Image (cartoon, rainbow, N blue to C red; front, top):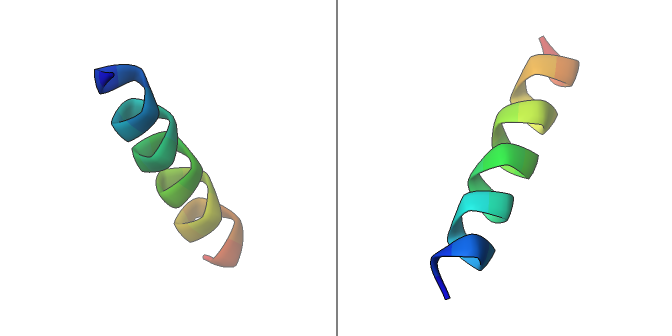
Length: 20
C-alpha cells in the first residue's frame, strides 16, 4: 500500500530533478 506513495514520490522527485 505504501509502495504506491513511495513510487509516486520517487517519480515526483525524478521529474523535479529532470526539470532542474
